[in-house]
Image 1 (cartoon, rainbow, N blue to C red):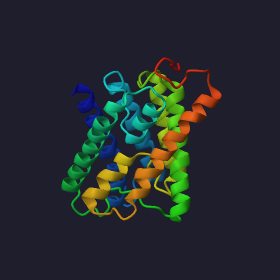
Image 2 (cartoon, helix red, strand yellow):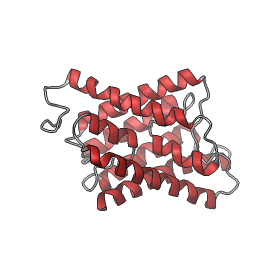
Image 3 (spheres, rainbow, N blue to C red):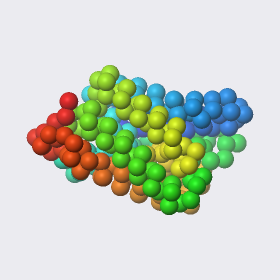
Image 4 (cartoon, one colour):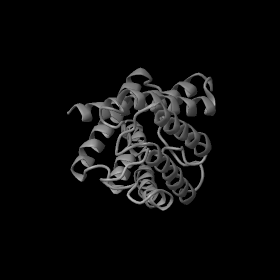
Length: 223
């Protein structure tokens, strides 16, 4: 229960501050800007990894949890509970944002600015590199330590910077689910549920291809 609560709190913070930055930016006429919003996403991921990594691994993302399972670093029985805790935290955060900013329309929901095919492909690629970095800087299914936090947070910020104007730069089904459900903007939610999952799964053979034998297994670990 401590691990599930940690995942719920961590994802709550991610969605509250990340999508909240989008809402604040819109309400203030662009006070944060695209770069500022991307930095907020990266910073909140980094701080939550530093705070909760030794409790739950600080996945904060159902796609990451799925990737850890595919890499044989995480038990299948814990995948659904983790995903449920993450999605629950995201929905609670979006609900709070609705209370705080009742006039906000999308609550930071991710929507494709380009075509659906291009946005789907970009989300797959962005999540591939996010999971690829995570597998490279973690041991087992734990994200802990200054180096891991900085590397993963920077990758999230980079993905948001690069992909935000096209696909929204979600890389996280829970991050997209919360705002979509609470705001009622879920016509393209399927894209942000499926594409990050595919990207995370593709990162596993990528990691195995460049690292030593056993890097993605119950017995192996990457430093």
